[in-house]
Image 1 (cartoon, rainbow, N blue to C red):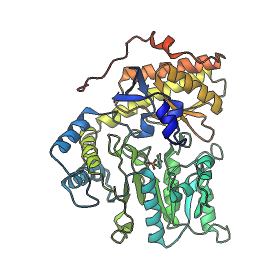
Image 2 (cartoon, rainbow, N blue to C red):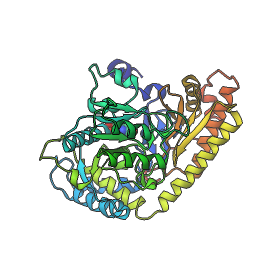
Image 3 (spheres, protein in one colour):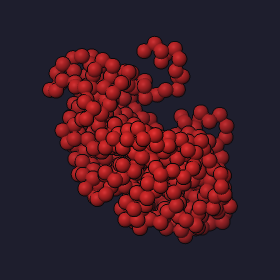
Image 4 (tube, rainbow, N blue to C red):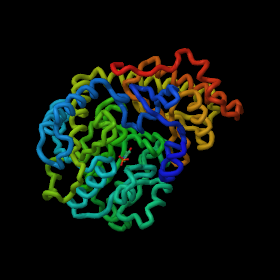
Length: 442
Ligand SMILES: *Cc1c(COP(=O)(O)O)cnc(C)c1O
């Protein structure tokens, strides 16, 4: 569309993969201005775990706006903030035996990571941060230094210091516990590895290609950190909020990181919101040392609280995500078995699953074709070689099946050498259900 070409910066990226103008969304569906329906397996890159415009959250938000609730209040005490903190403590932290202080940062994931890194440096009086191969923590300079991807790092235009890189779980092949390396260099005063302030890690590397750390590796990492008095920062921005089948992605490992960052699906509604959770002894901030005009987005407090009340009052939602996750894993494995020829592989946890196509070109051909058939799905990894399924967790079984059917069809067609990308009109005509416009109450 002309206005975007003329006025918007070339920096936009998702818009290139999905060049349509979208004007409506509900649940797992998006609609463009021509009335076409798309199944959303991108889910705001993990921001829309409860779907687009979730009715329960929307209701709470509209009610709050109608009552002239506080929209912006810097970090002032508000009832919306009190209610969020209360619900977060009672339904998320306490049932998991987590005694953590909540810091509201600027409302982006990268700002939460910046704050986490700053606390760790201030608390320990040390500078170094250990980050992992293929890790992604955001694109502001502190977080970017911890990010592995050279495309993102290259845009910094300045040196990115203060970070040591270590191999993530599986980086050196199966059966090699890479935490042993960290343990060794931290034990050896001549390793050339200055004693760091913290280690920052994702349990499943979302942008890095759905690389999953095993629970044993996470436990070993936590032990290595404790042994060497290095803080463990767990970046749960993408894998958290239910994506892997539990609220926090590290629960199954039984570890208690010193610091946890959350953002993406925390507001539940796609509203900007980020927090840092830290063990009370690490909350050594002096007033205002880390601030941000939009820290504490009150409308996000309202939807985040509604999301926790609605989805996390018992374990039924988590169990349902686990069930759907097993189904996706089975379907991807079936695609690998059927078409892989030893090349394709699948990996993931919960509803954070990936199909590794090894080649970025192959992955792109498949996702491009999928888009023509009404499925929005993206790739990640160093070469964009991993197709990742990040559908909303509330997706219906029928839609989940339909999305995976489309994916399988596209893999088959692309591997069969069908290089011609189909015109979308051919396909939309063939769909069982005609595109519908969602009703407000849907
Ligand atoms: C998306 C993401 C970030 C950065 O969040 P922004 O809101 O884009 O700044 C940081 N860490 C992880 C693991 C992410 O997935």
